[in-house]
Amino acid sequence: MTLVKRMAPVCLVVIGALALQAPAVSAHGGPGGDTVVVHPGQLIQDAIDAARPGTTIVVEPGVYHESLQITTDSITLRGADPDDANTVLAPPAVPPTNLCTTVNGAPSGICVLGQFTPDGQVLKTVDNDRISGLKIQDFPASGVFGLATDRLSVSEVTALNDGEYGIARFASTGSRLVHNQTAGNQEAGLYVGDSPDADTVVSDNRTWNNGWGVFVRHSQEVQVTDNESWGNCLGVLVLDDGSSGGVGDVTVRDNRVHDNNRSCPPNEEHPFPISGGGIVAIGAVHTGIDHNTVTGNVGSTQVSGGVVLISAQPIDGGASESNDTVRDNRLRGNQLADIVWDGAGAGNKFFDNECASSMPPGLCGE
Image 1 (cartoon, one colour):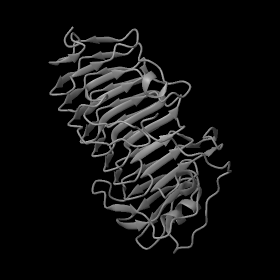
Image 2 (image 1 turned 60 degrees about the vertical axis):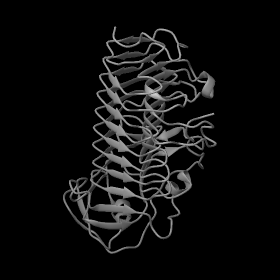
Image 3 (image 1 turned 60 degrees about the horizontal axis):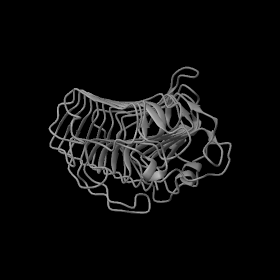
Image 4 (image 1 turned 120 degrees about the horizontal axis):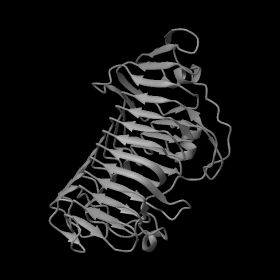
């Protein structure tokens, strides 16, 4: 049993760009450092296909009905006015027949793809791509989807009402997901998965009314800091899904996690209801949860409470939580309790938490 579906297997490919017909876009700049401007009525994918490493593609305000795919290193794709997020990417009338659609089973807003095997093992990464200043909404798969990437940056992106993830990266390293807004996505607003060497920062985002606000699964070395997560079924989830390597060396710090009381009913992915979870760590090892403000997360499910630290063994055969630290958090108004621990793992520490209730008793204060 898992709490979310994994990426579907795909065919082994050497990825190439697909040619699209559209009016020419304007460009200027020197070799390897061109700036291309895309205007309403033109195709963004046309500019991506023609871009060399180092190209910046600036998209003017408007609504663009495209599903984009990036497979070239060092491409910057950004809206012309990121403060207003008025450059909008929406689903095309006819889904593209590209690898992105094949991988996801449906169109996503933007895919950044390296080369990989049918089971998702990385053959070659695509490096240093940057996406910013766009609003991406209503895609049947994900808003932004990265696979086999190195140093992918997604910032100042608004991902709304997508059928799977808002912003997700699989089997990648060195990612930065910062200053984004994700809302109304069926699975996670922000997702880090399948990355034993994730070395990823998820910081200064606002994520609400998704299934999970921030989700770290089967990954190591992830920093989840200074985010606000509310109105989800779970605010922040760190999960060992039973895959080799587990999940660990995750830092969850200085986040505001409140009122994550949306109800996710049982389904084939989690055959039990989920609601009222603030920061939930299942089978995490060497993970720190500290200096967070966690309030008003109320539920009666097995993952309900302010900070919940439990074993993955009875859920999906994963590890028991071990060598985790829960400290200096401010918790109030959470149920089942402000801190919930099943006591299964070894080496876990709880101290200096400001809270009123814990299961078992004694986990608040020193």
